[in-house]
Amino acid sequence: MTVPFNEYMNEWLYGPDGYYAAFKTIGKEGDFYTAVSTSRFFGATIAHYLISLIREEKLSPSCAVVEIGAHQGYLLGDMIEWIAQEAPELLETMSFAIVERQPQLQRVQKEYFKQRFGGEIELVHYADPRQVGKKEAFVVANEIFDSFACDLVYNGKTAVVDVEETNHSVRFDAQDEQALRIAERYGQTKGEVARGYEAFAASLYEAAKKVVFVTFDYGDLEVRNDFSIRIYKGHEVFPLFEEGVDLRSLFGKSDITYDVNFSHLIDAFKDAGFTHYAYKTQLRALTEYGLTYLLQKLAELGNQKLYLREVNKIKTLIDPTIMGERFKLVEFHKNIG
Image: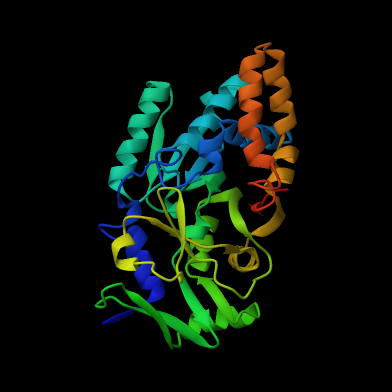
């Protein structure tokens, strides 16, 4: 029996026994690192940018702060912690929420917030962005679009997976019209075609009357006409088409990801009604969001050991050879003056 690759990947990641169905450790003990697991200054810098938007009156002090794809909730927690340092009065007017469909992850996030903040911060959960229903929302996501199920295209064909074979072999003998239309739009003859960007953008557009959405991920504006899809297991990387890779043994037990086609993502959000505000490298984005200011504040504490430790962590975020250039920020606005 064969299934389209996008259905296979969706089941791999989000099925009842999928990789993201239960809490997974990120960092040294997990399968991969993210900017959030690298340094708390990642979230703090985004929070500083949010505060600047409020001071410029582009958002109000009563806006909702929402994270999508929050994992344990570290990023939103780091943002709240910085808000408490720089503008504590906002904690009295803001609301904080996570969009998460998995009940088990919701429980993990609530427990984490209880441990970190006691009863001081109320965390609300939504299963869908449309449920936010606020006047204003600042929405943040880190590395979610690389985990949207995708189709694989190659010379006018799309991939299917034979799930009855011992190693779940992939072959190109289907023609999914939607995937091929998207590929044609970007001159793509080989590689990954994400599915679901359009529906996600449309749902986020309905989250609030005013929306600022910032997201970080890895990829480029231009397609490379090659396969980037790969599997992460215990910090080892297995290209999907590498000889000897046993998909059946890795299915649901490892992360599977690919480079984002940011042109496709931007078009999906523009088609939904958003204004495309910015696209830039993570290095430039964090610098413009105020990372230098945060480092200055840390230096003023006078703890040289703490300062050097955090600077070393931050280097990973902004070093062009690590995350600084490979990861990108894209920012979208709805009704922001």
